[in-house]
Length: 325
Ligand code: PMP
Image (cartoon, rainbow, N blue to C red; front, side):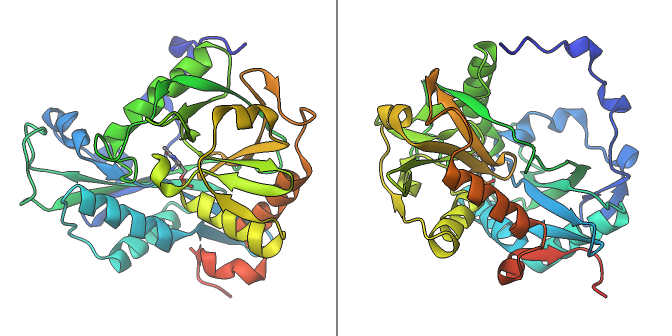
């Protein structure tokens, strides 16, 4: 069972290690100088949209690779569009901002970058505003990859349902949507699981609290469609292509039912934060033989080679941070 974290013994914000710079309002800003007025908190987050992007360090090449930067920025602009936000910056400017920020911080290890777009003028934030352009803040931090660590996930089916397209569109990566994920993950942790799996309004499997889901049945990989209440995950699409084109595993996008998770040969989660993680039990039903299955094992090691820049056929998915020799 996972015990309740002792919040008092955790480092407080000022003590936590952090980057030297973040990027705000078009420029690099020293960490301690990056402020907005406290009255903006809360209201600005109602409509904020964001991205979570990983960068992987390749020791041999002495290079830091941002994974699928273009796809993440494309989704950020799509989220802004749904929110009727105009951005002050072009994708080229944000690309330069992100790579320049990682360089300025001198990161030579795996990292995570979070660009967040928010309405500056929308107070109170529940009123319709779209005339004001969105401001962007980009926060980087070091974040070691879990790939190859052998982490195995125990999951439950959450008693919470997934938000839906005409309530809180899951397709937009909006901060507010994460209250849904938070209910799910808190319930899971309280009950001793690693991740909750969420059913949508139709009772079909949507995704996990911060990740998408695949099952393997009789050699076929199956994942819920983009209309199932999922975030249109960049890792899900990456995995789909790797399974089909490199590992010869057919992929089906179709509704998945709860009991299919109980009888699947393999189950795994995928997403920027979780990367590729095998699920070895669902609601305490053992998945397969309770170990990492053969397909997810091959997939995880291929995914690791790809993101770290050791698989030249997919180098177009990577954005180098430092000038290449
Ligand atoms: N669903 C949710 C709710 C998420 O937060 C994430 C992580 N961004 C994912 C799915 C996976 O998406 P991606 O592969 O683009 O990180």
